[in-house]
Amino acid sequence: MIRRSLLAATLLFLPALAWADTSTTAALQRAYAQTQSLQKSHDLSPQQSANLQRDLQQMTADQVNPPLFAVDKAIFEARLHGLREAQTAASGGQEKERLTHELATLNQKYQSLQAEYAQLRQQLANHTMQGARTARLKQEIQQQKETLQQEEQSLATMQPSTAPSSSSSPAVAPSFPAPTVAAAPAPMQALAAYGDLHQGKYGTELNMPVTGLFAGDQQLSANGKQRLRAVAGTLKGITAAQILVRVSGQPGGLNLATQRAEAILQGLRQAGIPDSRLALASGSGVASGMAQILLPSGS
Image (cartoon, rainbow, N blue to C red):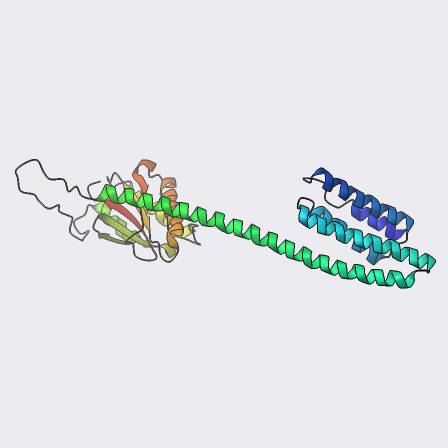
């Protein structure tokens, strides 16, 4: 009686019959009914009750997968048949030798079905993993495509015009500021307190190590947020119309570089820099492990 109550209580905690087709649901309900009938008519041992419980749980878990459910159902029916025959042999004792042979055959079938079941589950896991890997690769390709498009757009806006002049005056080569910030306005020179400040090919560059800004891959550290607030306070006093954020693509790759650049942009926005002045640019040419704030010449 104790074992019977224990099995009945255990069945209450099995998952609800859901998401399966009608035939599968009916088969699972019959399995529950057969188990309860066997429990009422026979005194099962704790091990036998536990085996039936495990089979029912496996059938319930696999009810949405017909191939796996068929294997589970065959295992359950084989075990149920063996229990019934064993009970009959124990009470009558007339066909012990035949039942022993049949039980051995059923055990062999059980082992074979278990092996087939394991193989099916492995195939299903491999298929699921392959699908996830394909989706992730597609996402990375799309992100890299968007990054390259942004890089092309940023480079196009920074290229000097090469169209010939309509006047007869001789062409004058474009002049770039000298690679020094000694003559820069005082607010510009103040940026040197937060990193390596110098004049590059496209404008004034403030280079800061990413290790001083980020606590992890793309999470700004407390010191990083504080530094960006200080940088933003200085940038507010500079008349540059555009502020570009660039992060080196090595060693973290283009995706990580883009995520870090966006985190820096968000930090500057939260510090009061208008979004209309901020833009994301390619990290091509930025030293490895560095984040750069670029104030383009002429902006």
